[in-house]
Image 1 (cartoon, rainbow, N blue to C red):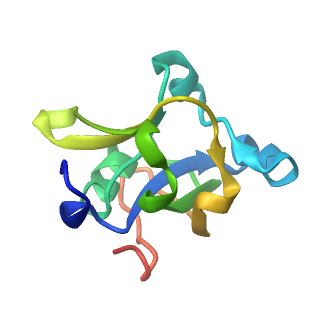
Image 2 (cartoon, rainbow, N blue to C red; image 1 turned 90 degrees about the vertical axis):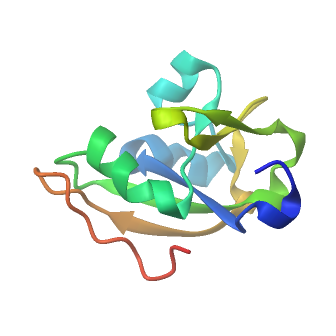
Length: 122
């Protein structure tokens, strides 16, 4: 995923509604606690999203899914190997500007890890 032609248009950020709420006032989102711990903001592609939700958000119903335009992220976006060697998008160098978010949707994950992704995830 090193060239623009092979990158998707959007990557996705999953947040709790309570963690994301202050961003609506400030205009930027600093991420979830794991992002602060790891030093970068974690994202998933559309293909990685269901597994990320199943592994890390099982049983949570108060979630927000953010569709983020890759073109808006600049050089802070780095693709790095993670789960099973897959290349995951990580954002370094500061908070996510809300102007980079194309849309947001509420989402929940059942206790067994199932969820229904919004139709506009692509």
